[in-house]
Amino acid sequence: MNPKGFQAPSAGKAIPTPTGYAAFISAKLPLTLNYDNQFVLSLSQANAALSELSGLNRHLPIPHLLIALYVRREAVLSSRIEGTRARLV
Image 1 (cartoon, one colour):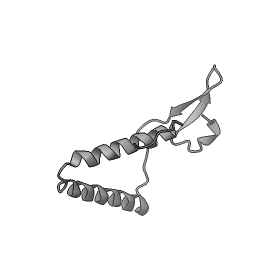
Image 2: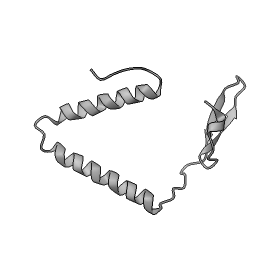
Image 3: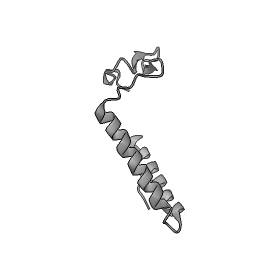
Image 4: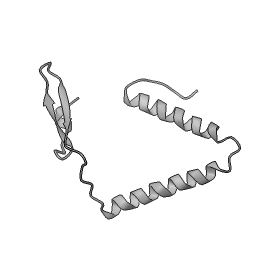
């Protein structure tokens, strides 16, 4: 972890540990969120997309197949964040 990457003191700070590594200490929760117009619009769009997906799910004969595909895709993408190479088979 690069301590210089933490630029928002409202989220917390990185401190050195005795072993030479950095540790992140989060700020007290809950964080204050700024509900500006763009943030509210993004939340609204996400809610609409989830509603659409939920509606489409009702028309699928076997909805678990679609869900399993997205669960696997999310697992592959999460592994890439950790540096693991995997692919959908």
